[in-house]
Image 1 (cartoon, helix red, strand yellow):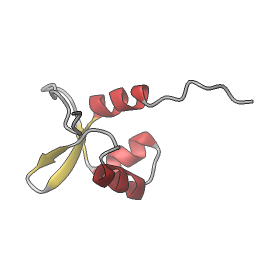
Image 2 (cartoon, helix red, strand yellow):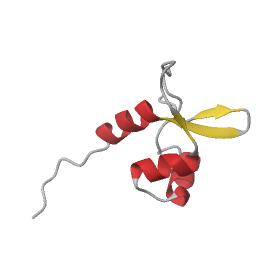
Image 3 (tube, one colour):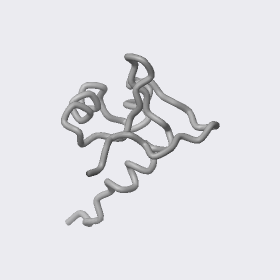
Image 4 (cartoon, one colour):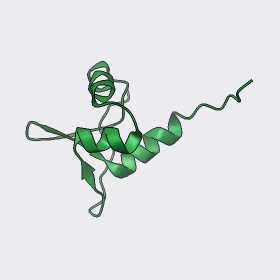
Length: 72
């Protein structure tokens, strides 16, 4: 079963706060929090009680969730 945890975080990868991740993805912080709670958002890690998003994991998540249909 897939998890919301990234497989590995490279030592040079950047960890973003939820506000920074939302800005990077151009979505609201609220949507990101709801998606995290529902288990269908981008992968995240817990650092203590804080949530962080790996920039490379956000990019991978975006590429796997691209719509392939064309507009009509």
